[in-house]
Image (cartoon, rainbow, N blue to C red):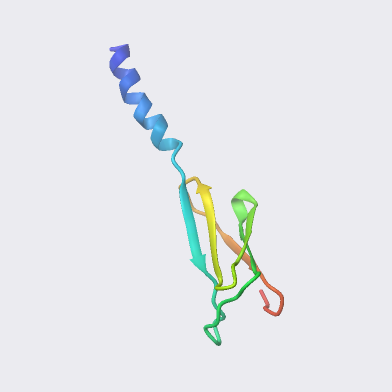
Amino acid sequence: LQNLLDRWMLPAAQVAAQTVSFSGRLLDSLTGAPVPAAVVQLDELNRRVTTAADGTFTFDAVAPGTYHLSVRSDGFSS
């Protein structure tokens, strides 16, 4: 029985350790233009990335879950 439990537990542990990439594109709501050099933060993880010239951003190795995003950029209000 223990051997059977060990085989069942290993896949569950592997699933819990999986991560995903999360990406998006930040656009100006009035003009539709990309917003470069904005700071995008995953609040719960306190992780930040900066948007590229085309407004894109990516967070790598994020555990599955629910997160809040914060965005800061010069010239925009929150």
